[in-house]
Image (cartoon, rainbow, N blue to C red):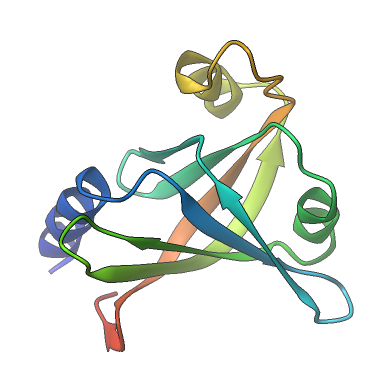
Length: 126
C-alpha cells in the first residue's frame, strides 16, 4: 500500500504547477499561508521548501511544528500533504536545498515537512 502511495505522490509531484501553498500554524492557532516556488520532494518522505524570505512562517515552524502543503497538477487534480515540519540551516537537507534553490536567492534554511497524511481532494490516500 505504501509503495502505491509513493508512486501516486511521485507522479502527482512531477505534474505539479511549480508554486505550492505552504501553510503553518502560530502558537495562538492562527494559520499563515505562503506561495513557495522553491521546493522539492525528498526521498518520497518529505517535502522541502527553501527559506528564502520566511518571517511568520519560520516563527510558526518553531512554535508548533505543524504544516500542510497544497498543490495542483497540470491535469487539475489537487493534493494536500500534512505533517510535522522542522527547519534546518545546516546538514544534509540544507545541502540538498542548496543544489536546487536558485543562486540569486539567499537560501537561509530549509523547511522539511515529514509526510504524515496525503489527500487528493477529499480522498485520504495516506
